Structure formats: C-alpha cells, structure tokens
Length: 280
Image (cartoon, rainbow, N blue to C red; front, side, top):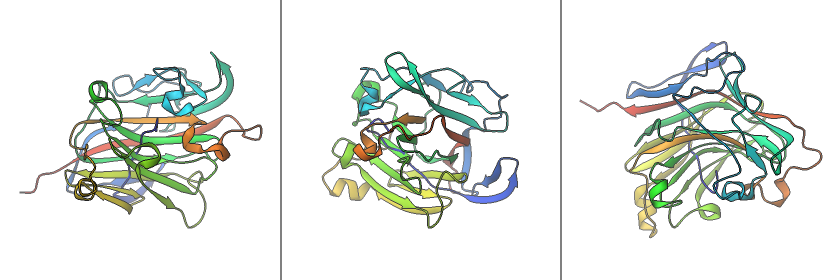
C-alpha cells in the first residue's frame, strides 16, 4: 500500500460454514499463524496478534501516498462483528486535521515469516475513493527503509474499479508506479459482492499470486535479477491490512467525492500463514 504492495494464492475450498467456505490447504502446507476473528462483537483485534497503527503516517503525509484518512484504534473503525469477521470501517468525519477515519493493523514485532503462503478471505468495499489492501513488508524496514525492505501486495483494489484486484512486488529498482504488477478481473460481478480468498505463495525462487485458487501472476527471482534489479524477498516479512481513503494509487479520477457514500467496510473472514512441509 503506502507505495507498497500485496500478494495472493488459494488452496482448495471445502464445506461452507456460517461465514462461508473454509480453506483446506494441501498436505504440503503447515499452518504457522492465523487469526479467525472470532472475538465478541465490538472488540478490537487481538493485541497478541495485531498492532494498531494510528495517525496520518510517520511524517504526517498520508502514509507516503497522500491518503486522506486518519487511522485510529477505535472500535468505530476496527472491530470484530461477532460473526467471525473483523471489520475495518472508513468514515467521513472530522478527526484531527483530516475529514476521514479508518484503520490499519499489522503484525510487526509479533509475527514474521520468510517464505510460505499468505492468504486472507476478504470482501472489499465498492466505492469511489476507497483503497483496501492486504500486503506484507520486509521486517528490516526500520534499518534499510522502503523500498529496500521489499513489499508484497497480495490485494489492492481501487474502489471505483471493484471488479479488479492488483498484485504487486516492490523493491529498490521497481516501486510505486514502476512496481511489478498484474491485474486480475472477475468475469462477472465485483469483489464487493462476496468473499474471495487472496493468496501469495512464496519460495526462494518465485512468488505466485492467486484469487480463489487461480494463479494469475508468478514472478521469479531469475526474471527480476536478469532485468538488472534486486530480489529482496529472502528475509522475514510482516502482514498488514488497511483501508485507505484517497491516495496516489487511485489517480485523480478515483478520489472520493460528494457522491461517495460513507461508512464503507473492509470485511476480513480470516488471515492465515503457512510454511511448506519439507519433503522426505
């Protein structure tokens, strides 16, 4: 997101539960971390799993992307719904020096992983000016900065184009508008109509992105290095979920306007991380 990115891939779908299909990962994957968001209605995310980031960015510049919201740690902006989901809600309201509020959570300092599979089952908002994202950042960002730390965007959606999801990789020579990106577009409907599983499958030699099990982008380390760029995806990464309002990613035509209805919600059914089981 913040000039950063996110990833995606899925496993097989099995029986439907109260919150829809659940994922049955292949035998080569072992669950290493998860949040199923089973908290009581109105409660904040589990503090043992998530850090709630607040404010308008370290430099007060909209998280490096000219975003318009203030992130808060209030249940009005991020809370369990009591039905097995976490809901991040963007609101049009004056808060500090901004006209919108929302939330951003991450696992920095609590959980990181090198390689494996990252996935989330999510329903996004469909409204002009909204920018939902599920992504991962290199844990060494505090030492080397961005984009040297690397960024994996599993899901980014422009709210005025809710039928498409974008997956990207950012690194030292390929970031922002120059990231390695690809779009996946539904044949019918939008990603706001129902939940979908977005995943990134990550090995030393490549990262593959998928939606509901359909891989739509695979980036190999060889292709990056052969292009004179640096592969920065061999270190621990932490997970991020957020819902931004406005920002450079949305281009001038995608910014919120008087016709954008608020509140808007990003609904997350689960987030899971897997490691690959070594072959015998």
